[in-house]
Image 1 (cartoon, rainbow, N blue to C red):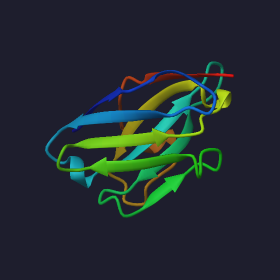
Image 2 (cartoon, rainbow, N blue to C red; image 1 turned 90 degrees about the horizontal axis):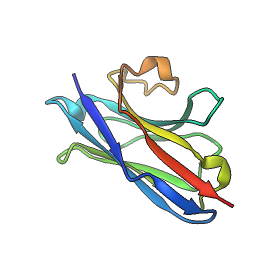
Image 3 (cartoon, rainbow, N blue to C red; image 1 turned 30 degrees about the vertical axis):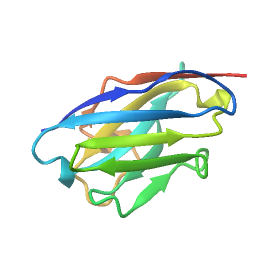
Image 4 (tube, rainbow, N blue to C red; image 1 turned 90 degrees about the vertical axis):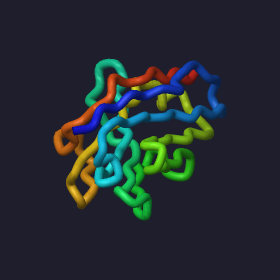
Length: 124
């Protein structure tokens, strides 16, 4: 099992940057694929980015490609999401998630472990 705690959310103006962090507990963290999802009010939870257990593969939603970067530090049991050139449509609660599925899923249902979420608000 793994427990996840996100931090780093906040309010920023359009064009600004934020770095989200996800701290994990559990002895097998390095075997999990990790992902970030987000959910805006009245909308379904959507995939943002994912990274393989080794960090060698990354995947991004088209809406954030070129602006967001996912990374991980297995020694520290941390996952990060660097968000640059933020837009008002990036406003959402951002969630960290973990999965043991090797194929790195992009659907929420394939991730059994979730953090509590951190709010990101981007003003125009």
